[in-house]
Length: 172
Image 1 (cartoon, helix red, strand yellow):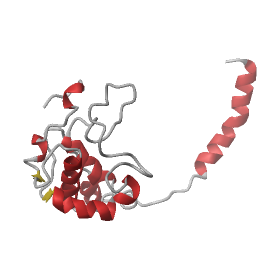
Image 2: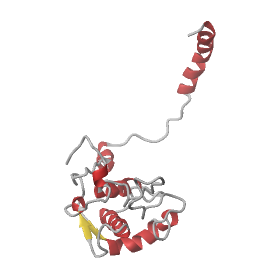
Image 3: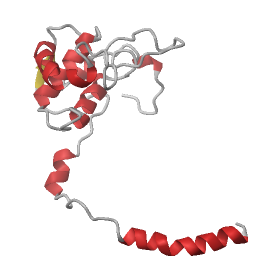
Image 4: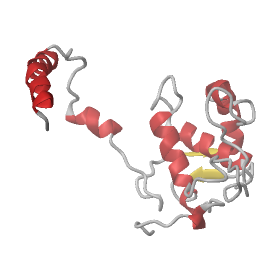
């Protein structure tokens, strides 16, 4: 470090200390019960999946209410990512990464929806609603039948089209 750099650092150091003291202390500390309520992990083999179930048919209406505005009427993408299609494109010059073409585990779809969707109210969906939306999106990608019902036992059994194209340290 040059002499000039040292001098600049010495001059700026007090402002860093002042800035740290003026950071607003927003929010409140979570109670252990609140942490437990939002602390969950769903593994690829289904460990951690909650009770509940939902079908693609049930998920269709829910998708129209909760997802269509951001992801399009058929999951083609609008404001946010495309969710449907792209199968066979991953190894092409212009891969289309969707739930059906790229994601390796169906349980990851459930986990993501449960944690982050809908965008305006993450975590607000019931377990049954998350299973239904997951089933609907898997159906729209041609992975399961429209009449299929998913739950903690059936969801990990769904084999995603791109599953074998990943190398993982963790093996089920």
